[in-house]
View 1: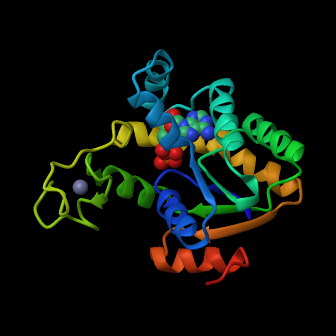
View 2: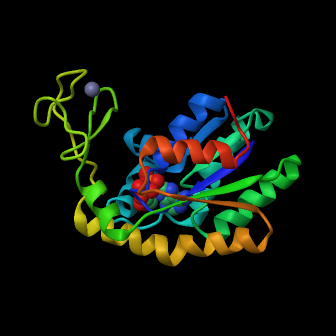
Length: 217
Ligand code: ADP
Ligand code: ZN
């Protein structure tokens, strides 16, 4: 199964992606994670990425397309692919289609998780994570036992650089103007479109996603 997962920041893409790949074993490629890893490596390219990402702007297409095409090429596409956060522009979507068509393995479905703007902002600005194990918390909804400390590691939690309210608003603007048109692009191309309500409980959304994709187990 080759699937693209779309949705505004805070809709729960990352969480659902993790569940889907744990259950069904496809390869998970998160452009956000891949770009953050490149940043963490402290390369010249990483420095360049930082200026866009910390401002909540999209990284230019030519950079993202090159990085993601390389990541896709490393996978065994027969095993299935879950693309999370990519493509985010029509140019990226066209590049991905070309690459997958060349492999004879086109996308089979597009999953879209939606939610109201107020909910998205509340979720993201309250999000904290553990720098050591990566576990994600929320100051109100999923608080750690001891304020600001990871339950598992006892390490102080951190907030992502781009999870502040101003930057979140910018990320939402980028989503509405540059990424929503990608939904139209796929719909017009006759893809199987699956819309999910990101305000529902995580379990619920995961169940609906699996069912709509025709996966079970
Ligand atoms: P979210 O979806 O919650 O905004 P991500 O972790 O997916 O967060 O992305 C974080 C940032 O990484 C984005 O704001 C953007 O700067 C950059 N980014 C990720 N994927 C792409 C992409 N496909 N094209 C351009 N920029 C991207
Ligand atoms: Zn931890």
